[in-house]
Amino acid sequence: MKKIFLLALFCLGFTQLWAQQGVVFKIKYLPNRSYQSNISVDGKLNVTVSGDQEIIDKLRDQGITQPVNANLSIALGGFMKTGVLGADNAMPVNMDYKISNISVSANGKQVPIPPKATEKDIKLVGKISQDWKIKIDSADGKAVSDSAQQKMQQMMDMLQKQIQFPDKPLKPGDSFTQSAPINIPVGKDGSSAKIDAGITYKLVRIADGKAYFDMIPNFSLNLQIKNVSVDMNGTGTGKMVYSIKDSFPLSKEGNIMMKIKVTSPKINVDGTANFTSKYDCVVN
Image (tube, rainbow, N blue to C red; front, top):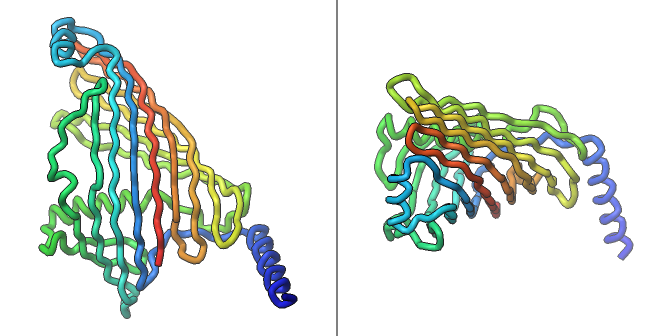
């Protein structure tokens, strides 16, 4: 009993020292691990359409009355398995993900979703380099073309950039902000979508080998195509739990409220959107 008490006291003291001195955080994949994850996103939109009466009448004839209330729900899950670390400090990785649910409704009426959307597994094979970046080599057992590989790589790079911790120890009370301004070309006339998605992370506490963060997301989008203008912006709250021994987040949840404004010569849209997201991961 005395030994157990001393061990518990040692662990408590070590944890407190850890928290006081701070921890250097970094997202990285470890060899011979399985990362089982699930992601879900739910959205609610409330918008009012104004402008050309003929267009509004056509919408009403299709059962779309004012204001328009829409609900969106999507969920996907799967796993990522890493292999043995090679001499070049790279390791193989296999990924298998599947969309488990897609649901869309407008003013209480369900929008038909093709069954194939939730039937197919997305299987990818690649390598994780020594700088912890994932490179995709094949999809569904077939070699990936250069163009497809480039698109997948861009998607992977974007996902991996979601959390970039500072290269210094963090202790409870410390915070940092990560922003990702993006310009996406959308037309031959040089028009682009300007997106700025940022998150402020605040380390709340360190306990039992885990770090607990509060998150404040901020999002803005501006799109101009000829005479059409789209503006979206919003902020919200969230939480994240990070495993120190696994160097990986075990769970994230967030909520963001956005304002939406679309203006054009014939139709205008004003409204709000509320999105909630959940992510959990088990590392073995």
